[in-house]
Image (cartoon, rainbow, N blue to C red):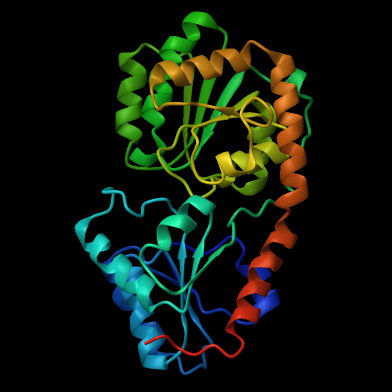
Length: 332
């Protein structure tokens, strides 16, 4: 399995699949180091899985698939296909890797429909949202939580933390007591710090530059009243589902699985457009109506518990690959 970082499900997958060789590639040094490790490894591999069929990860997967003559499976976890958000080098390699794949996994229906334009290989919809209900669960009643809006994720442009901070400037005019807590790491930290100071929001916005353990993140979900996802594109996002498992409602842009799984004003508040004013409007409506927050939280919780439980969804994913690969040969 070749990816930017080790899958959170790797231990469970090894229970179902057996030993998995994980190669993490995120720059040219790790690319060549990973290739050397794979070439030096004399173990017999059954399949190579690339988690994002882009330049370095995709090329490494193609090379190993060809050299070992084993099937290549590509997984598309982000909605970047047919959008000019990728570097040219990634846009060139993407269709090549998809065409050479025996199977392509799409983590939501929107991605599935786009992938089919690039390959005649089998494309399967298998969500990558796995929620451990032993960790993510409600511990504090909705009405007892603080007036905090929570953002947890990478501080990168597709996540739009800057728009959320701009939205807070509008929201506190209507609801002065609310606060925003941002948890994550990324290149936009200087930008959002400057924005907080420029807009005079130091008393209303807290930034925790950190990656939290699952247990610590579950605690944060239980402290806040509302989760905010303002991404431009997503595969899941997992955070909205984890928040729901903690009986925490979300305001979210219609990205990834969100519009496929949740319904506006029933199990989520859908933000129609990525503008600070619209984000602020969603926050104010939700923070001003505790009954609406409770209703949405309860319905979202029911959906996640019934459909995205950790063990069940990982087993569905693992078993599909095992069944598909029976009798399959490499697609050269």
